[in-house]
Length: 220
Image 1 (cartoon, rainbow, N blue to C red):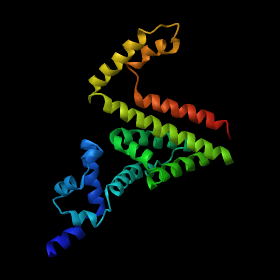
Image 2: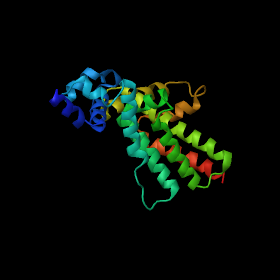
Image 3: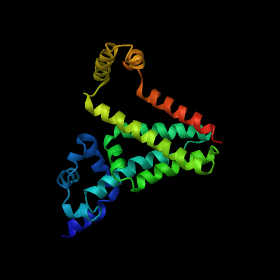
Image 4: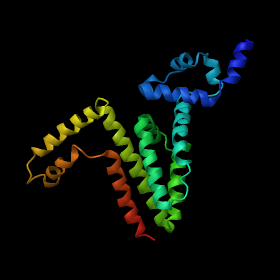
């Protein structure tokens, strides 16, 4: 009993969240069970329940940890526009590395992680001089773009086999289908087929951020 009590004290919430993150990255949400967690940590259920109430709270805590590393990271000596691009790309990369984060943010938007995203992006838009009511609209549009594109990119990655060669083959197959479409009926899609195969997801994402920022600049 004494050993178990000491184990409960030593097992911090950070350690539990780190182990949960590993399970989520390895097998998605289905892999995160308290049985798997006790095995990973070589502990009992009581030691975990002492820190975390249930799976929902554990998912939220793991999401908070991932997002916190992005939105609280310092970007010294850069103007707000570049800092915003850095934060946006950091969120894109974080959701790409941890696809379950995007799903969790969409499922429980009232949790602290999404509030932190809004606060960081809203603060940077304020520093850019976006005024009044336009600030609310600009922040909402930009956050929805960042999380929407990042989530879709992560979903696309799960839909194909891992690895760059598989991505190239996946996009090549789609590009081939697009190229066969009637150019009169689908002129844009037919033209875009040539770029689809070799485009870089991160570069395209940042191009979208730049388009947003160009529009936002007109609001000042």
